[in-house]
Each structure stands twice: as structure tokens, then as C-alpha cells.
Image: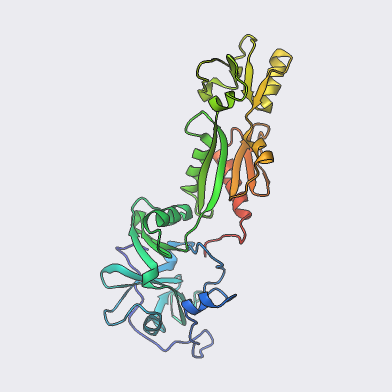
Length: 348
């Protein structure tokens, strides 16, 4: 939906009818639906939270005449029987030229028939006092994580954030929340690669639920304090790792053997044994191994392991990608985490 090209429900009215031609029943109010324990959602397929349209084009921004208050009863009376575009499922009702107050409604009509069809049912999803209108041109309203981030930052008290974002598109999120994903890895290099890759994937992906990525980072220099030494061997010079006050060598350069402590994972130990014929003193920094002693308890965990060369592994609450993961590995991993949500999330 664009602000410059708002889809308006035509002003002509016909008597409300359902698909069989009989008079349409009155829709249950959104408030009553929320208060009734175990009530069916007024939006098919939605169990909440995070009601997000799967396409902004399913959202109609509709100006309401000054004489019509933004109440459920008045809006239902005004909208029933008016022709709606066949893709319209949600209506953001506002006064002419004014976004200071908006209301969110779900509408039903024959979406499989003609280009336009009369509205047969109207349900209030959020009253004006539950909605906030936000303008943020940095937000792509087709990206769930982007919508929720904006809602939490710009309208933290609102039950619904109606957001006009990039390209002047308008969409919304009802009851915004995000799945917490702890990203466990070792730094340097910086920025933390896995965290950066996952952030980039979420920034352009429409079919993943809103996720809140939280870096759970272990610094190589901090690991060194577990086994103090004057000389450390790190896996790769490209990581840029240093240990203050100590000599550092890099395994990928195959240096002349010395008395050192290896800061590395199982694959580094194997390479060391291949080069030098023995195992060195070692601090294991494999982030995947932390799942054994520190399993996810708050949200889920994304991590990595160098023993995974081309595949993604997963278990309850976690997923692990190869150390040199591609963006496609990360996308697959985030999808596996999303599949573990209960209830499963999907845009509606």
C-alpha cells in the first residue's frame, strides 16, 4: 500500500450478502473475540502474536468521513456492502488526511471471484487507542523482522504499529514480538561473521518470523586466560587474533614447532597432529560444544562447528552451520529454528 496511491473502498453501497446470496450475519466484535477463552481467531490461520500481512497489497488504507467515528459498530455499518478489491483482507481506517488516529479491521468478502466484491463481515482487530502510526523510510514493510524492530523501537506501548516505510508502503504488525536467537561464536574476526551473516539474511527475507539476534561471543584473548602461557597457536592469521603480552603463531602458516598452547577446535587439533605428530596443550573454543554444558533456555541458539563441512545440523532449540558457512547455509539454519516455534509462525 502506498500513501500516494491509496486503495479506497468505493463509496457505492449494496446490501451485505454472503456468497450464497443470503444476508450476511453480523461479525463478532474483535474485543469480544479476544476476551472469550478459546475463541476462534477472527483472522483464519492466525493464533498470535505477530499478525503480519504476507503482502502489503492486502492492506487497504481507507479514509473515513468525519461523521463516522472509528468505533467497531460505526465502521462495520460504513463498510458492510461496499466493494473491496479482491486482495484486500485488512483495512486501516483513518480520518481524511489524518493518521493521528487509525483503527485496524479484518474484512471478509469473495476474494476468489470478481476484481471487486462487497464486504460481508467486518471485525475490529485494534481500536485507535491500541494503534500507533509510524513513518520510518528505513523499514521494508515486507520484512517481518524489520517491521517488529521498528514497532518495538518507535511504538513500544502500542498493540498495533501501522508503519509507513520504504517506497511509502504501509503495513502493520499486531502484538509484535520476536524469537530470541542467541548467536554463539568466537571473535575475532570482527564483526562476528555468523552474527553479521544472519543479520543480513533477516534484512532481506520475507518468509522468516521476526527474530531478535543476540550475540553470545567468546573472545580468543579471554579464552587464553583459562590456560596462561607465553606462546599461543591460533588456527588462522586471517582472523586477526592476538593475545596481549604473549607470542602468537598461526597454524595455517605451518610455523616451526614450539612450546605453545593451541587455542582451537577439534579440526585444529587434527591439523596440528598431522603437522607435528602430537597433540598440544589446548583450549577448545568450539562454540557448538557449549550446547552440552549450556543448552538454550531462553529462545534458541545458532552456532557453528568446523567438523561440519557442507551440512547444517539441528537439535531441540539449536542449529549449527559449517565454520565457513555460506549465506544459504544461514538461511537454512534460520528456517530450521523457525520450524521449531510453537505455535509455528506464518504471515497471514
